Image (cartoon, rainbow, N blue to C red; front, side, top):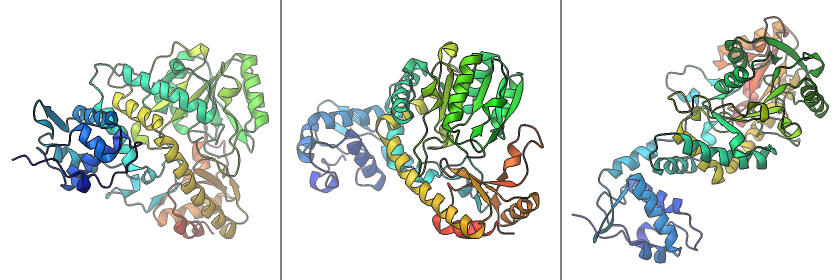
Length: 459
């Protein structure tokens, strides 16, 4: 037998009054109530007028919330009977709360490792699960479509605003292309240009693989403390792949002088630069340098991803493209290998709602504290080691000075069940890079554990 409406003073007392209450708070409260048993299928909800009066909010806010719940299938409206909780939605609510934000790879029960010091894995436990679920609920409530195009367009608009505001990247929504990951983006861009490809060495190995798969010529260009050595680039038209904000894997920043030299070279040779800003959201103690795209929008592809700021599970990357690549399609668009429409709409909502900015601000504080703890430990236990890349990103490089010292440190870390990688592993050609340096991600190192972990590097 259906019960009367839930008592406003009892059930809704946790919601703030004052007219600024977002519809998402009402939706969350009802789903939370179903999850914990305060509401049940068949329950009659208050009328929109009564609930608005009880909460002290505009009626339109309540109507919008009820519309969202109806679109999600949580409620059903029967003429003459009001709005009721739909059958089976308690199970839906339990499932929604079980669908937590992604867990760290290391937390899987089958994982025998203590932790990972390998770059590339963010701390997904820093994601605000309430905002994460809210954005997914928004995506799930959208009307079904036969094409991902509407979802893609929404994300293009959100990214154009986000990139201009956060990184001063100048791109219209129509100039943003979406891909199901960075590698498909690199493959598509290289295939479209059909030119020789210059890459940093040491550099991103998966980029090497993606470029080699196109069948094009791939040449290595060394890096030093100021980043890519522009004078070593070919004096001909080509594609240049670089990670200027935090060179992968050394961690150094491309200096302002080198940035200007690089864009001058691109103009002189009519070349295209792919600027992979994989973890450019995070910088410490120093102001971020301008994106290359800001300096030469006609010659730079700005490449970004949700993998480091949020989680690799979203499988979304984006590229702000220059005029020579305007014909480039979204990778796999319209096929099962393409961009996931629900994920695109989820990320657009996450950006537009301010959840991305709030997450990055929170994560940057946490990563900054972990980085500081690691640097203190390095200064105490390895005062003679050369540390690079500590100004930005989520990892740094520790050069121990000799192959023997690196081998001993790596063996100790492996014995204590820590995943590790070395700088030499990221050379384009074996032997290009001295095997003396360790890559050290601090993203997953708690401040309380930093000293003990770094102490393992002493030999």
